[in-house]
Amino acid sequence: MSELHSLTLKEAMAHARQHGAVELTAALKARAQKLNPSLNAFLRFESAAVFNGNATGSLAGVPIAVKDNICVEGQQATCASKILKGHVAPYDATVIQKLKNAGAAIFGTCNMDEFAFGSSCETSAYGPTKNPWDLARVPGGSSGGSAAAVAADMAYAALGSDTGGSIRQPAALCGLVGLKPTYGRVSRNGLIAFGSSFDQIGPITKTVEDSAILLDVMAGHDAMDSTSANVAVPDYTKNLNASIKGLKIGLPKEFFPKDSAKGGMDPEIEKSVREAVEVLRGLGAEIKEISLPHVQYSVEVYYIVAVAEASSNLGRFDGVRYGARAAAKDLNEVYFASRSEGFGQEAKRRILLGTFVLSAGYYEAYYLKGQKVRTLIRQDFDNAFKDVDVILSPTSPTPAFKIGEKSNDPLAMYLSDIYTIPANLAGIPALSVPCGFTGAGLPIGLQLMGRAFEEETILRVAHQYEQKTQFFKKKPNLG
Amino acid sequence: MNFDINKVAKLARLTLAPEEGAKLTRNLSTILDYVKNLEKLDTQNVDPTSHVLNLENVYRPDEAKKSLTRDKVLKHAPASDGFFFKVPKTVSRA
Image (cartoon, rainbow over all chains, first blue to last red; front, side, top):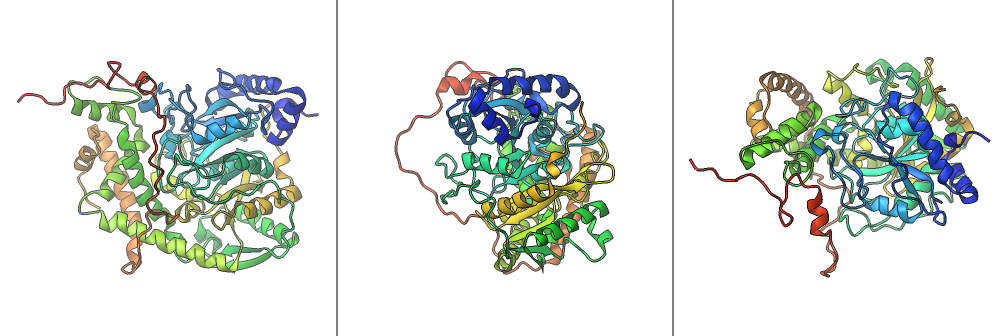
């Protein structure tokens, strides 16, 4: 039997049913005390198991870690921002309520890019998180703390949020599974908003089955979120082993240009992804080339529409109702001073960009144009899914990059999300599953996208690929 | 792309230090030049997407329900008098 901290979520649940969960939380806490000072994956974990799990629920008292933008009643939720320093959530997010009802404990609040603005976890006001596979490198972002915590065995599973790839890209860079559900599949109530037409909460786990277990708990309509979908929720763990023979998997030719230097994809990534295609073919899937002609405009659309939504959502942080208030002589100065002192550089950059594209005289040329091209990208996916069941791509164009490598070049950072953003624009489910390692030993992720509300299909393909390849068994060497 | 960063900052209720403003102007210009790629596409007859689920007017039954208590909401406010959020004066005499 391996050490208690290194169990998968499913194994931890089995252990808890037999022996209780107390020693599981203790094992994670001991692990975090040892490793977190060098990784900075958790912003807070000392208040172990802030809610004691319930052994009779399906999650059997097993502790789950949570990103710092998801509200847990009585606990700090700061979005890794100075402007929310010390802010304590007055209520539970719907997903937290559901986890608690299923008997989960909550252990560990995970670091993130400030307000989820970033792909590296470097914009956190509380210092960057390190990648457990190489401490000089980023864990990805924005849910980098969630991914690093799970990869370092300080958590069995963690919740992240994904607006443009913030669950899948860190999962890929840390050798884990990350699932962004269909927009509307999981309630956003209690998730501090970034881009309200994109945001989804989802799991980051060691195996595909673990993600399915958590989606089972979290999915479903919620009256507290008027954008949640009233669509029946299947049992996501039930059909993981059903044959994928004859299932059609599409490779968008725009993501795999003949001259791969043009695609900006690292050659080692391309090699691993192409090998994954062959494994899937071996499992009986039918591989087809498809076209998503407008997908090359995804980053442009995203950095108009998502920042516009962000600038609007962040208007509420004004020093009046929560978080930090700067000393000022009148109310107007409270707004200016609290926001100028409270927001970091990337938050200011996106607020300004969003404010600009929504401002009089520019709205039509930027925001409206972005929304229209978003329609074209959605139509590309609708057309492609007439011919195929799943669309495959890399998750990230590169493996984990060095801390500081892209932090002074916002556009280079934004292009890290080139393969993940399209699924958020179209609202479809997508996941990342480990598909190998670079020569230097850095994890590589494979992305699978599915039709809206067909999480079952991508989980099934990913599970069978994972069981065949077993990349998840390799762990970073952390002593 | 030319624009007045201080005007945008004012709309966003941000004060920028001079060197901060210069750097953000460069950053934003680069990004705005990049998104110009979209001009290549003819979108005259395309409807904008504001939302992917095509939901319309989601209503709930008009029933009284419990909501957060005032104490809970005010507990973590930067300043309150126990009934309301407190702020400095909102109007100053000229």
